[in-house]
Image (tube, rainbow, N blue to C red; front, side):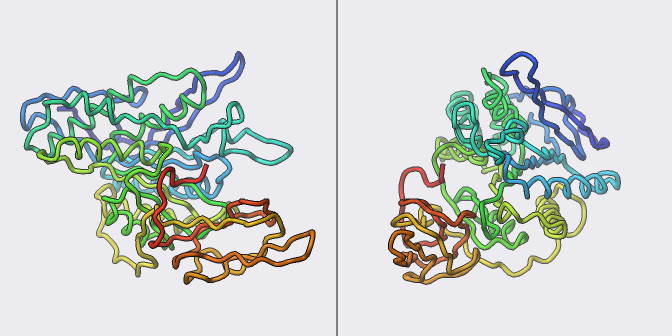
Length: 399
């Protein structure tokens, strides 16, 4: 059994493969609390098939900011977390291991087009930085055939070992692919994965797996979320699901074995792109630390939960509000507004005729996000309502 112990914060640098000579990109990683034995390489443990043979490492959380590099509020919250976690670590209060990536996408940070920051898509090929993250489910299920038993803790150790080995076997040919792989290696063996993003203009909201609704509601309650959106598969393989879905896949493959969903992974949308206040970021960091405390990663008694501001709803019930024709957008309600079916979300004013077209919500729910621009072409998605009466299928996330 490996000897895990509390060590001071460690700073690690992960170098990405180079796209061309003379170009170097890297990801900084801060580690607090109980560090892995070798932070310079992925941990690939050898778990015996004997019952009770698996050692119990400390709990681990992985938190990353701005995989979409133009979603800058996440990076501010990461800096607040960095200082707070460092203080807790110095006081010996970080019981488990907390891995913090303060900016997860150095490629996207440097992408400028006509003076505008473009960090959502890789300009090399147009692929979303938070899509097509490698799905390890098939590799893990194959590695676990005939190995799971009746000991839930041992099964968790076996799944984690298979995830580490599957992630370690991945290879990349270009920086964006390497970025996703190296971040995934940091996260696959974590108990908690928090992927921090933001929307254009939005109320705070979360995405998580449907079977993990209770944890998503707990985190959302601590953070003051106005929408919590759940799915078993949202489509496109975003980072959070690449971490949590393999557990669900193994559980479904082995219904007769105790396989807990031992990784809670969620996307936290930290309001809108312009929401970068220091007090707000500090409050978000405090809420995240309280969530980690309630999970057993930070010492101290858990605080009383504040009132919950929303119910969890299916992502398939999220209604995209779409412009029927081109025109000037005049919003009639703010993010976080609760709507009834038929309420007007926005007006579209035609610049040819001056005609005003009211765009209404089809379902009741909360307007949790809207665009930041005020010109729309026909078919432009203007906003999103977290409802429960629609039932969309296929890819549920925007591009």
